Structures are given as structure tokens and as C-alpha cells.
Image (cartoon, rainbow, N blue to C red):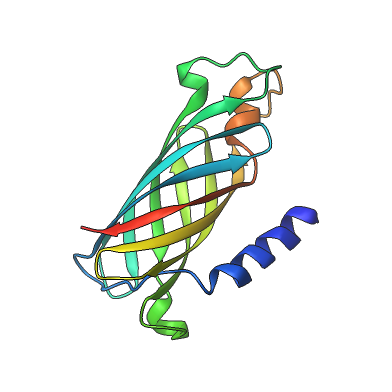
Length: 163
């Protein structure tokens, strides 16, 4: 329940921070911090516009600060995702520089969802925040370190760039 309340609060707070999505051919690159219970790390995303409100892309995260009780190697720390977004900035019409984008992702570790928001201060630079959550885990084996690192609610915050 706490996670659901946090997700709702995050989406409401991020309605102040997002970016415009220009549709087909639009390209966005994001770099930021990945914050979760068992680890902190970095995240990179790339999104490409296929239509007026649709984009696809890739996302990667790498866990740097991992709880000391977990002994994680590179494969446990790394995740790669293919993602699909519904860019709703022009639908909800909050601001020309704002984009709210719910979506789905298929990764090496799970099948999940995300809700993100971007706000651009100029034509090339903005900020983003994104909440990610697993919908289906590939393994429920609690002895697997990846279960703890990549199969939980996480928040990403950082910088967004137009390419």
C-alpha cells in the first residue's frame, strides 16, 4: 500500500517536471540515478517516436551501491530493457514542455511497467522522473541476487536531452 501511495504522489509531483514529445522521429536520451531498497545505481534510456503519441526504446540500469549482505557480480547488477511508451503530454495539455508517459518494458530480469514525466527547460535540456515496477518476475527464487536488485519498485531521476 505504501508503494501505491508513493507512486501516486510521484506522478502528482512530476506533473510539474517533464518535456514535450514531438511525435514521429522524436529522439530522447536520459541519464540519471536509480533509487531502490536494495541498491542505488545509474540508468540510461533512449526513446524514439513512432507516431504522435507512441515511442519505443531501450533502457539500461546498473546497480552500484548494493546492500552489503548481497554479493553481486556484473550479471546481477546489470539489466537491459526494451520499452514501449504512450506519450500523453499533448493529450493532458498541462504545458507545452511537459510529457507524461506510462509504458511497459520487457527486460532480462522481468516484465514491468513504468510511469514517467519529463520537463524541458530549453529545446535540448530537461529533467525527468520515472517510477518502475515489476508486473511479472522471471524467478521468485529469493536466493537469486537479481530477485532483490531488479524485481522491486524503483525511482529514476535525472537529465533528459533531445537528440
